[in-house]
Length: 368
Image 1 (cartoon, rainbow, N blue to C red):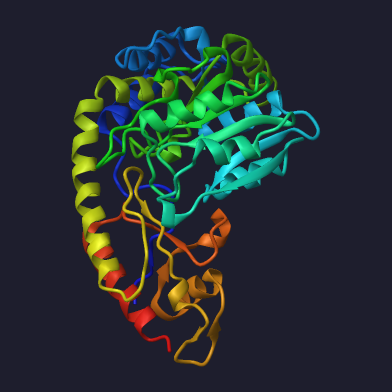
Image 2 (image 1 turned 90 degrees about the vertical axis):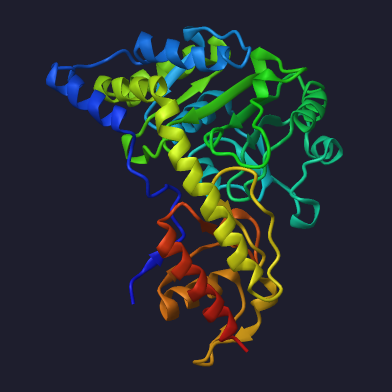
């Protein structure tokens, strides 16, 4: 039986042809030298233009090109956090935040949200979790693993709270911003009450443009913070390869060719996965507004026995059972701060997704 993974954080699509062609052309032109740490002027300006199309006025000096968005986060954690500082993260949240914090002076403070409340983060809950030690509020929009997209009204209500804390930075991880379905995406910086000197946007090309292996990310924020991050990156990783940045530039310029075909497939697969989950007894889920994951609650199927007599206690046990017995890979919800759940990507080939949903139904149906 072929192994099928719904656990990947990247999609199966090929990178845009414009990116590949631009990288090859750049290499053939001999662009294999050190580039500027902050990124090429052309790419930084192109990123500014993306936000200008949304009515925002941003300057290249506010942009830093990074080797992936994870490195952008690490740069900021290193620059902004002192011993004892708190990073408040609404959960369920990407497990990578926890891993990055292992190498930081700060500490992660989970702020739980619930499936039963559609993963809504209320201003009241946020206020209760902020204090004088809170240094960063880390939002992910659209959410990973939930697929939740914050509305503009929700973001503006949260900003009313954060503006009460003058030492607080807000990091908005918007890496899935172009992968949306039923709800429009709003960048935090475009909201009423957004203070430019306290907001940092994290983004990149891995998710929206199927370029995970290219390691292309960026941050956009106040010049003072960006300068410190440039100094840190210059002392450690230096700049992103110029030929990769040329590929990113070409991707932005040709985005209208790359995005629609991928989004069409993802929308179809989203519907297919939803139909598959609906066929399984007592599985609860939130239909994602963005990104390419479902994050179902499989609690009803815990504390049961497999055909071989093993008792399934946790979602880690459940995922191991599905992997070993049905060659189906999911990511346990425990890793995201949501025991009993599991993350399932629908960014795979449609026939393999159909087979995966059949295996999931059979695997859960075999528990007793």
